[in-house]
Image (tube, rainbow, N blue to C red; front, side, top):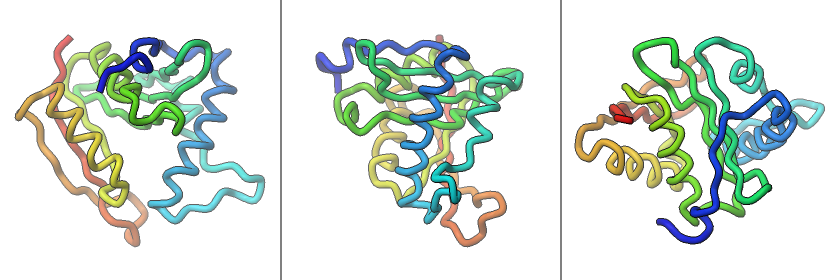
Length: 170
């Protein structure tokens, strides 16, 4: 979907100055996922956040921030930039920007910045993700994509993650 909301979306690499904003978005992201993973916050009200640190400090990782106007609308973390397969490690769009084309525009932008082979994981228990990610794969790779169930590492009680794989050209 493309409309006036997605037309004013800016997708850019997140800087160290953006990290506090991304950390707050991360809390919203994990709150949303807690519905499907049964996770509760730690006693201080936060969720695991090592991926935020990795995105800003580790080689082969890249954080992105999505803005609508001057307001944060979401983020993405990419890993594997130093290897043969890139992984969209985390992707989040704030509820106020969902179903307006923002997510589709942002993911196209992020993936096309790093042409090559991609993998993206999501949970089938999350109906919005289960609709969105195959749509993205078809949009970017037509019929040249695969879907595979993989166990969640160290979490045998959870349903397997769905992993989609496809190649993106520049």
